[in-house]
Length: 287
Image 1 (tube, rainbow, N blue to C red):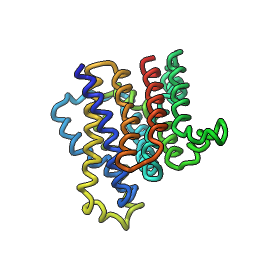
Image 2 (tube, rainbow, N blue to C red; image 1 turned 90 degrees about the horizontal axis):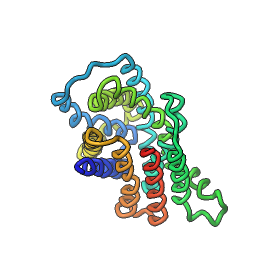
Image 3 (cartoon, rainbow, N blue to C red; image 1 turned 45 degrees about the vertical axis):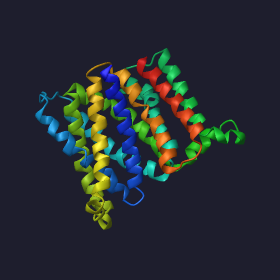
Image 4 (cartoon, rainbow, N blue to C red; image 1 turned 60 degrees about the vertical axis):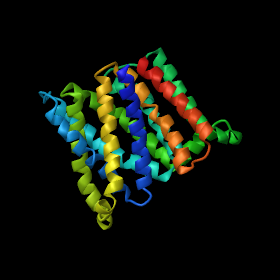
């Protein structure tokens, strides 16, 4: 059961990455935090190259790296804006929509189709998202959905979840044409390099924030790198579906962190909603 420990650690560090990012965004430019997430992960990821066998790259590797990496440049920035603008407890659970969108994008890109249990998972994710804002129910049956989409953070994170449903397919192509760890290092390096000129252009007046806040920015990269390393280790020990199901419990942890650290309200509704959405992910991944 050591794989469970690694998968659970993945969830913890994913959530800690969100918490440290949100705290840093109070005083640091969003583009600097976005770049730092990727850049400060590299010192922890690059040394792994000395411990793995460098794979022979397949024909589709560079295509997957360019398309997947370019899209992830966008999602990295939008992700940070999402957790900056709204409560972590209502924004973080929206990433569980990625498996739902995958039921649409995977058949188109990879020719993979959902099963009966996959469809049950979709319904649970929708039900969970409804529960996140169940307090709005008195305004009408669809008020919880409307309230969710009116908030800037959840709306941006829903966009991230959709793009991730596309990039997940390119991640699979990238891994198939290299190896899990090598792909992780390659795409993080690509994203870091592309984000750098964007950060310079958007944050010219705020570049001093990097040396002034490196003690806050480094942990973001560290938590991100640890989450990836533990996830890849867990995947090497058991089925991917099991690992992803446990890793998505980071949504529940983020709700709790949002309540205890940032004093966010409505924790009961949001905790229940996040739990239902994670259950939906479980159905989809096991299907």
